[in-house]
Length: 464
Image (cartoon, rainbow, N blue to C red; front, side):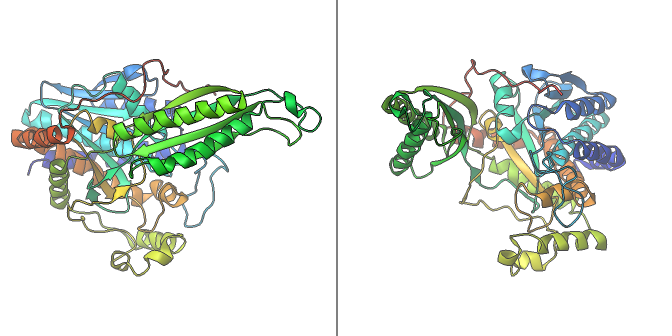
């Protein structure tokens, strides 16, 4: 079987891979601050004979490892960042390791290691069989703020790829079968003039008035956008006391949609709304554009190939202790009542089959910067079960499972699925031909245009 050497290698190195995942769980680092995760990943890559670049593509916490030469060139996408405020102990009730600290509530400690172990397995099989081509592992920062891979793409990171695989922990064992939204993100800062709100109001120019008028205008705008568009906002700054006319206010907006064209059109109109609010209130406007990303375009051919690989490998088995842990988490989940009659949940607290591939016409409400890689080359995402079935997304339950054996079993299964899927594409040129044919149809003659302009600087790690 294609991939058998890789699977054996991943099994042989599993203790070392789990150790790295545990270190990342113990030391969670937020977007652009993944200094330790980057260093530890680079050390592993060097140990296994990869050509390693730290600070790749001008991102200080981006690490890249490559092996081989020539085409095909296939990438595996790791991610390094944790989520703020999701510190959690490995237990079935909510309790932080350190209150307010970051935690692995999206399981990126597992994500990074699954793709890293997958790359190690691929390299082993390429060496042993003399297989031609290049495997590249990308340790990517800042997925949670949706800009890490976008900055990397701006710097040309993925231009040489023929195809790419991503992996993510999930409640299911499945491959990407639907689309999720692209996004623009910006903070609108208004600057006015302070005054005594009771005794001297005519001399004040309220920045808060401007922010609120922008919100009124944005809410009217919602009626006149395409049906895929979503607009969300949150106030970052809104004054200090009622008797002081606020001279500073800031509101943070997301514009999501299913095409860059619709996102950019709506964002441009939102900017005009903000400019109008500033004009009405005689305040100044400064726009802090934080970045954007594409909508996902998973390659169905590659998804089917990866589903086939997962079925060949076989799903993990779980101990009674692991099943009990997951069952208790399910009962403590806010989703449990709605899911308790779900036939999948009746089959066990952890998903224990490979979900048959079927295209899902529903649209995922979230976003990911993996989408930008999908707009550059054929790409899909593999998902394996790393937490209890009823766990909410970005939750303490996911963080708990990411620091113990349930998460590690799903991680290693994911590593094997990535390795076998990539090796199938190396071994048989028809797979890449079919994937590229589909990708060309999806792109329909369009080319990738990075959503982040060149003048936006790459964020730097915060000094401790």
